[in-house]
Structure formats: structure tokens, C-alpha cells
Image (cartoon, rainbow, N blue to C red; front, side, top):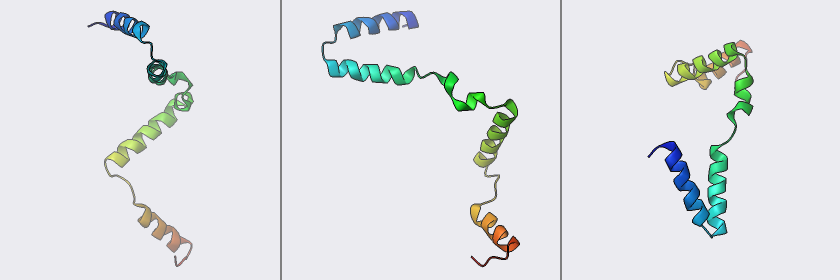
Length: 83
């Protein structure tokens, strides 16, 4: 079933529904599906920042990071802290 046919069938089904709670549920579902991603703050970031974020995510996915406990120990040593 193609997109146009599917939309037509959905219109017909919606027209036949009399239960307001079902219509509200469908409205909520479709509203969430049509969220405008152009307003997403990420899209306004410069390309070099996006690339840096993607690189960080990739490194984390590949376990290429320093664990928090190790960073904390190095900072404590640098500042001569005991905790």
C-alpha cells in the first residue's frame, strides 16, 4: 500500500470513528509524529560542534574514554586532595 492510499484509508477510518477518546488518542499520536525538527537546538549548532559531538559519541560507543573514577583520582592528586 502506497503513501497516498494509506493516507486515504486513514482519513476514511478517522471519519468513521465516533468515540472522542479514540480521536484524541490518534490526534496525540499524530501530533507527536509531526514535531518540527527544524526547531531542535542541535540543528542551530555550527558544523564543527556537531562533528565534535558525533566524535565524542562514537568514542564513548567504542569505550574510548577515561572512567570518572580515574579522572577524579587525577584531579584529587593534582590538587592534593585526599577524597
